Image (cartoon, rainbow, N blue to C red; front, side, top):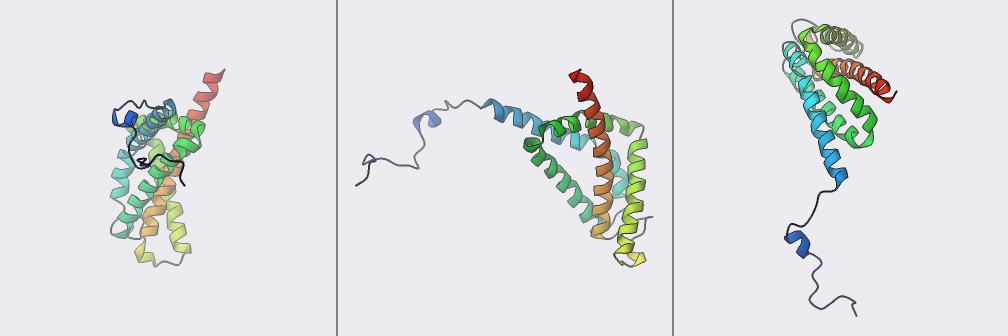
Length: 172
């Protein structure tokens, strides 16, 4: 014997949903705004590194570079809900690092360090020296991934530091 009415359908859309009477929860709007902001700031920081990075990879290295970019983008999407203060700092500092591409000292430094470290990683792993050339291009997946990930890591660290300083000054 069931306690449900005879004509009850648990899969039927409620009348208020069907009528469009649903209002958006404030937390969802806030999350959406942070998510969109992260994506925009992330994309604004790509032009210069992508320009130089794409000229230094080929073959599987391109796949590694694109994989690292997508991984970092998705990590930011995950961080949007988990680490709001860090994400806020990255967004503020990310605007500064994006603008700094016009005087690309940070991005050039990050790229040179990343290529040097990546070269050591690949050489330590025992890859053939012909498979990883710092110049003119990297043809290994791991090389493209590491170089992109390290470059982005340096830029993200600087962005977080700048954003953290801005947040600290605002709190005073």
